[in-house]
Length: 298
Image (cartoon, rainbow, N blue to C red; front, side, top):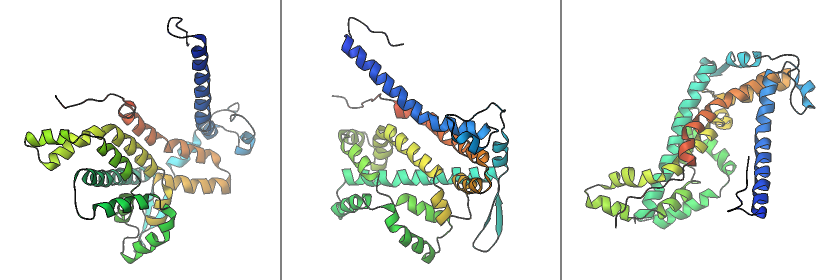
């Protein structure tokens, strides 16, 4: 309950607080409503058509978790380049997804960070061209080069390999400008102090500069990880023999439309939310932290 302190808050400020609070509550409800609807649909015994016109799916006829059980038992059959068939169960899908999410996210963070650091603090030939290239590539739509990328994978024998996906994780320059701006705002006096104490260039980067970006790195890590977790298209186009959870949900969606098994589809959606929520919970303190520390002494 918001109570007005008459000594520090007048009536107009108090009214503004309540208006902001009301808008925030409306926003929270609008964001959470689809997930609540999906969860209730995943356990409702009523059909999708029966629940379609309702504000929330009905649970009056009981709760049924069989949709979750069917998704846990769901299998995907794939063929590798030699025509060998593989069968992937739920835990195989989770393992493939976690492996690719961690590796893709790490590469997508490491290369732009190192490039931005080098560009900001060192002078080398081709420096201006590198920056110009990074800016231009930031504005090029990803779908504009998809056909070329697909052909390139085949010609280099990288199609349906992890290396192909890792190359695509390294390529985007979208975050380069963000890291460049952050490194630009960090005083080089930190590095000079470390050099005086005998630190080398790698020690300065990993032990002095990089920790100062911990908060923003956590934000980009969570964003990239969740993006990779939900990315079914890359799996479908470039790595079909290693299915992931998002790709399984995509297939289940098609089957739900064909056989009207929306309960299994919404169950799959709810299961797919678990890992992103865990990742966010792990990094939430770092993301939401506003505490900054300094190491320079006058």
